[in-house]
Length: 190
Image (cartoon, rainbow, N blue to C red; front, side, top):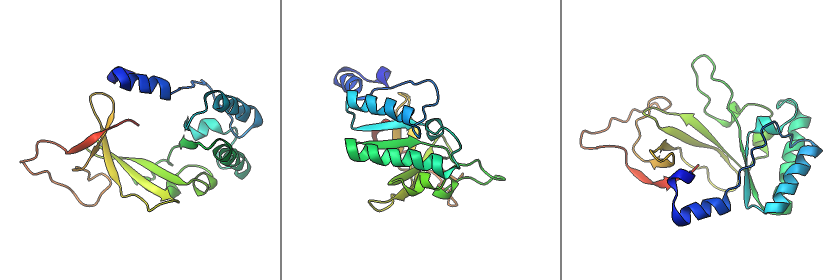
């Protein structure tokens, strides 16, 4: 991201994005891992945290109620005490016999990972380099309709409004000859 930013954008990125490369599992379901994260939160006072990934944040099985409950309870305490958002990156179950994971029931691990979340989104494969974003759950608002993004030459992502995607959709969009490419609306970074 820094390579594609300049001037005030680079300054904003430097001031507002802190990456903590822990380099190993960080058990946020255990007191020692929780203490480390609280120290970082108190030192930097972020508006939010993105954790990659749930599998690295849980010591023990992600199918175990106790292990997952310890993580989601800690998550709830952090949100309440520090008034911040927490986003977790997690993986879907593997596709079964050619079928693709397409809903919140396909999220790998214990039910509490999704049940306690306010929102859950899936990043699903599409054709022609597109990525489908699906809102599995949205507790505080109406669920969003699926939308598509593609990666551009600056390694950012652009929302695409005209999509060629027969991979997951039953309706095929055939692009008219008059269109030179997908219509794009703004850049955004993920």
